[in-house]
Amino acid sequence: MSALVNYAGDGEFFSKRGMELGRFSPVKRCRVYPPNDPHEYAARQKKQVSVEVLPDECLLEIFGRLGSGCERSACACVSKRWLFLVSSMSRSDFYKFPVVVKDVEMVPSEEDEQSEGDGYLSRCLEGKKATDIRLAAIVAGTSHRGGLGKLSIRGSNPVRGITNLGLSSVGRGCPSLRSLSLWSISSIGDEGLVDIARGCKYLEKIDLCDCPDISDKGLLAIAENCPMLTALNLELCPRIGNEGLGAIGRLYTRLQSISIKECPLIGDRGIASLISSPLSVLNRIKLQNLNITDFSLAMIGHYGRTVSNLFLGGLKNTTEEGFWVMGNTKGLKRVSSLTVVSCRGIADFSLEAIARGCISLKQICLRKCCSISDNGVVALTRNATSLEILQLDELRGITLAGIAGMISSCGKKMRSLSLVNCNGVKDFAGGASILPISRPSLRSLSVRNCTGFGNAGLTMVGSLCPSLKHLDLTGLCGITDAGLLPLLEKCEGGLIKVNLSGCFNVTNKAIATLVRQNGGTLELLNLDGCRKVTDESLVAISDNCFVLNDLDLSKCAITDSGITALSESIQPNLQVLSLSGCSEVTDESASSLGLLARNLLGMNLQHCLSISNSTVEFLAEISWRCDIIS
Image (cartoon, rainbow, N blue to C red; front, side, top):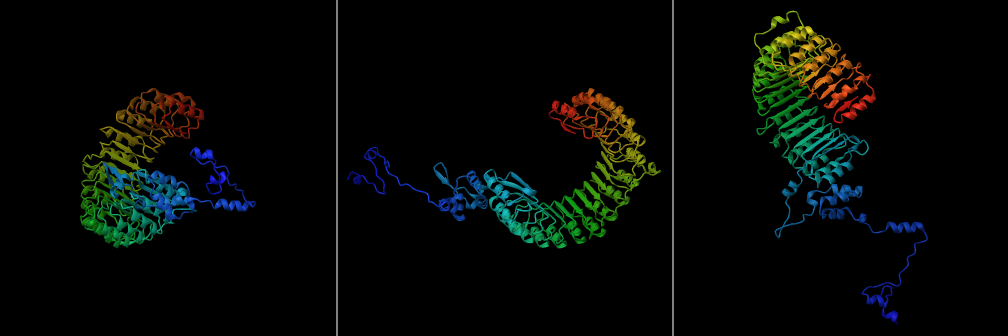
């Protein structure tokens, strides 16, 4: 009977002692026996209750009520399903917990949330690492750590590459994104870019390169939803045309930089609608390999009142008349930098018009423009009174007479002249007769790989440029001491940087004169490939150069004696020393190289066949901060 009195139900009996202690102590438990069939037991185990059985809607509700971003990131690590769910959530999906300030509850506003995530984090995915899973992980991991501000995706995984799903997660989860670069991704289209535009209202820069499935629809979404855009780069986008570019021109008042390259559907109408907006503040324009005509050049010349940097390249449908109109309309008064590459239309007549119309022009680069001759460049330097830097690359119509005319007619502001691969420049007997009376203030002269430029040209330049500070004669195998010595004698202020790389006919005599006259100012000396330079020059460098910080002796005929002489002199400023290809420098110079390496930041010992690995290891041990290349 006592057992019946103390019966508590559910088939369990409790003792009197357990009742007295205030707790229920089971004295009889139900035994559970596993089924005889192992398959049936496994099926029962799978039917155990788990949070995984909840639908996505319930999980999203749970994730939205988590107190911090760290907790959501931890949930994203559970499974791929949870990762994509967390990354697909936008800020509006998160429950806004009230904050109590002095007994007053305040709900954070959208501006407060934006200020918490300033978007200073930067992430880049390249090649095989560019997948939707990694992109979702970036979204989940950056939302609570300051916000993603810059995202670059270059290439895509060939099996599980970036898709519209990945871009959509960025659009929903990264509202602080300001810069987006998509390069060589064929698996994304307008859908992903539309989600980016709708979610990333603070987007300032977009770079689309080789994205064949993105069309005007995606660009229209950007134009309608991203009013902060300041820079747009389009390259190899065959489905983007005039409609998308026109929308950018109509709706944007903050766009400052536009770059378009190899987009076949973009023509005169798109460029005109972009340039002609009365509210345009464009200051940088780059147009390359487009199907535009003289009409676009005329529009740029007339409406480009705010443009300061202009790049035109590969415009095959333009003529000399278009470039003449562009310069003659005088709308490019603020252009300070102009680059023209591979444009047949620009010639002497149009170049003079540009020089007169662009009154603020300070820097101009002309490359592969086959219609330009001496007359054009001389007229350019005569009329462009503000010109400071002139770069001529692969202009076959330029001769030594043109160089003399340019230097003599340039204004007092002209500081730098560079000629590269101008094979029309050749010495001639009457070179000295074209010397002008004026003394221009040219400070930097670079003549690189102009195979016909020799001693006569160098002598002429030396007479014209007494104020040189930087001299670059790379690849001029025709010059010798007879041409270099007169130039050195005319230099008055002291050379700072001298590059004689590839001048294998220059000897110790010229180098000794160079360092004796300019040892107090010379900071960089490059003698790469000067095979006639020996230890004698190295001794002169050691005795005279006190501020030298970069010395290149690659492939020179120096030996251990020269290295010893260099190490015994005081070289407190020397930071970079290159001995690449100096086969006569051996292990006997190990101690001397060690003395030099203590103060160096970099030493190049590549192709030094007589220096063993043990010597390189010794140098690396005694000089931990010197980067040794061997």
